[in-house]
Image (cartoon, rainbow, N blue to C red; front, top):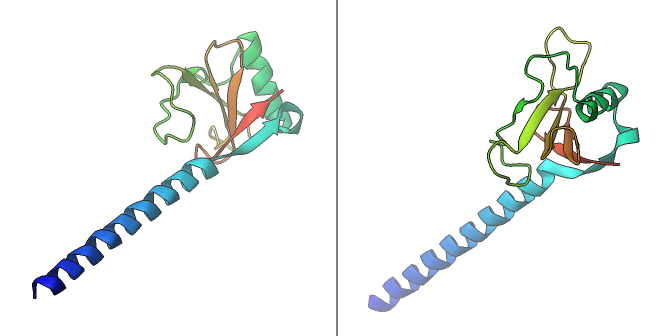
Length: 129
């Protein structure tokens, strides 16, 4: 009886270990998938290029929320201190702000650490120059 109990306990511990390992692997894959590569400035849609130019020149911006703090609550972008990232709307043909954004970190006018999302923060591409 004690032997069976010990074997059952070993099996349970092993199963829990496998589940934890798989969960960690999936979480890592999701985080990596969220920042799906890079995109060159020249590959951005024209309106996103214009938004990036506005960021580098300090504005003016067409939307009140442009330049507001981006919290990175989705934790897809690299972790940085609070207030590091700011978000900017990429103009679309919709009546509201739409889903496209550029999120930049660091100095507001440098635009060195910028990411593009066209699906409202579900995924990002790092913008390269």
